Image 1 (spheres, rainbow, N blue to C red):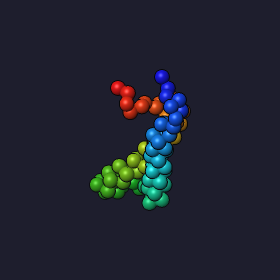
Image 2 (cartoon, rainbow, N blue to C red):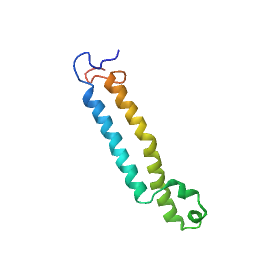
Image 3 (cartoon, one colour):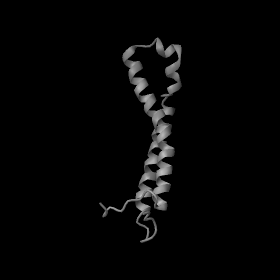
Image 4 (cartoon, rainbow, N blue to C red):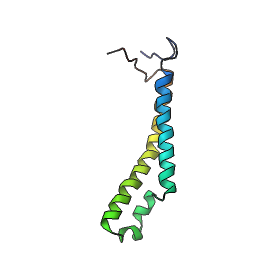
Length: 94
């Protein structure tokens, strides 16, 4: 059964925590893109001609930034579902 606001505001803190995760992912994604870690560069001819070790490092960081792009809406949706009580599980339940 959904809990949500039935017994007060117990689902607000977990929802705000998940919203905080989304904001952290936004900041990390923007910081990595500003730093020049664009995943589209990995498909260019210039990237293929670079040294292997630096290409692997760049690829890992750029794909992490791309992964954050998918985490952001996931966290927003999860926060909404927790806040309305559909995805909220009280800590006392087993």
